[in-house]
Length: 371
Image (cartoon, rainbow, N blue to C red; front, top):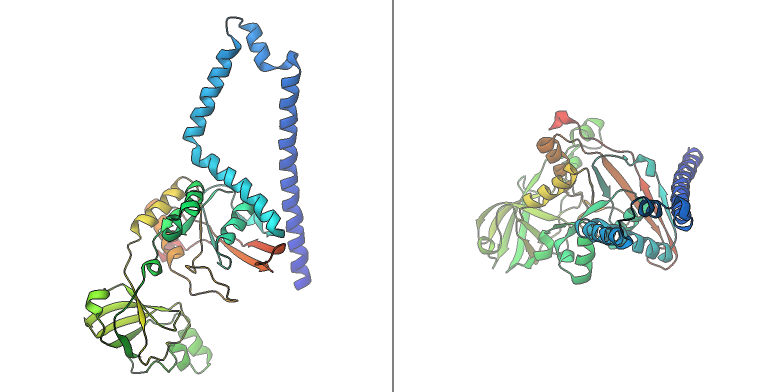
């Protein structure tokens, strides 16, 4: 099976290389034909036009052409900058990596909007590897924190990125400490936090726990100021945990009720005077609106649903942004966006002349009946 899979991948790669080679051949032929037209006066269209209309001076045509170039440059500035940045980073990526292998490029729809969804293992390099191996112009969702940086933000604007304000970028340390937490069924933080543990390994139990129910957690603090520093639908992150808990209700300054993210398999941490961070609720309505506007223009959007870069061998709990975007596009504009999964793998990725593999999966479409 692995041998057949490798042969199929090699065949896809050869087909993609053949397509790119024919495109380069056409570009070379077009450039050489322009050189011929400029060299031979008998077939030069400008020379012929001036001969037929002697009242037109050469500087008339030159002035008109320069004016048209300036107009196009102003109106299409961002488009031109995108491809200039793409050419620049294609050179940089080809220098840094010994080889960047693109697999499954034929899975990318040639026309219409596309949503690219990838794992996030190498900060800005992930977006560059997708951009340089994909012919579509991609507008990435980028953290507003990065968007506000001088150089990075300017490049993000040139690439047509959409800034997203993340709760973790404005996180603040909470007052006091957490002294106790348990779920509503009375289990403390040392026990398993998943309903699957009650299934006993049976098939029936696994089927029932395929979609785990959210777990409500009561959190008790000492010297805390929950009413002042937190708000319902905000989040709280306990020290030593990688999972932020969504706040459902704040009882008083030292007691609140939260909900653990059902997408996470991480157990709750043991608390005994644990510190915590406060995440304010952020309204992303405007961000999602900007993304949908890109789709209505038949553009492509890139998103990394883990919400942040990391160097772990597994993926972080996925955010709900992909589902929200896909369903919003279907509901508002009637567009069933093809979701193209992108796998990014690096071999000695943090070292010079390593190797990168970018694999595009088959498009995924949501079922309109689930809207």
